[in-house]
Length: 396
Image (cartoon, rainbow, N blue to C red):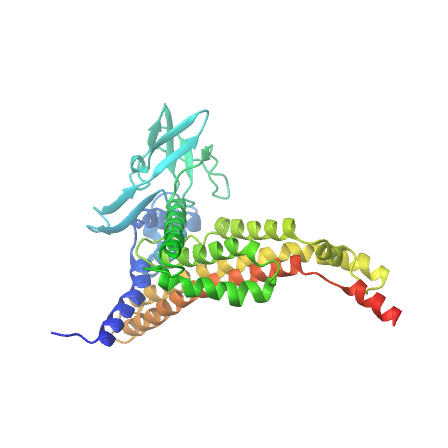
């Protein structure tokens, strides 16, 4: 039997579109965390530590559970849980642990399986540690894993320095290795095949050329673009790949982590600052063609603008990715809320459409970050000739 390529492409596209739905709907071992969060919220709302969850109505419990699931899906974790089965009473988590590396009067290294998905206390060299369900951080506790809290509900236990390989860190390393192998192979194929890409390189070569010809050269200029190309290519594919992994059942939310987007923005800011020409700084601190009193007013504003630019890079990427996850999870939650033959299919359809949009946004955010970084680099190396023009005009 011969299959037409078109139906096959449609099936593949549908499966890809369903990936974000699988990722968002998968509880990834958060059932116990969510239960603890609901109890904690109930206790804080009613000011009673015991039996507070029972005082809530079913609707209030469901609302708290939905919020807790969204919160825990966006959080980082110390293990990979691919899926869970067996119900809430006796859940079985399928995944693998990650290394926990702590500094607390010495080095403590052990696997996160000791925490038993956040339910057990891990012992290392006579010290006891436990993951707090509300913030996902590791604290030093007693042998029973008790936490002490202040009046505002913040944990007051000692917190060791945490250098653990968390889920987000692990995926960053995986994407970094993947990029290295992919483009090292692409470079070798150029040498072997007379500057002709082979294999996966055929797909990525047009994207690389697009970044060079339509982003780097127009915004930075023919003279200086080459020294920025390695960073622009790295940042584009790094963000794109991380975003796409975030839409898989692995359940990672890396670019929705403010620390990650802040790091990318700071690197962009440092490159812009340390490669900037004197004309760039001249236009910030002593803008030509402007009355002297105005220069003193505009200089601090322009200097502040150099900091606001990378800050906008950080917030834009973070907010767009987090918002997409939250909206998608909220639509899936509506399917259970409506629980009707009309409302549930409608919510599913909207979630499916949004998941398609999320795949586009994953690429779009990588493009926007790269484009804006190129604009900042272009402004830093732009050579101005205002003084020369003034002299020429005066001479004539």
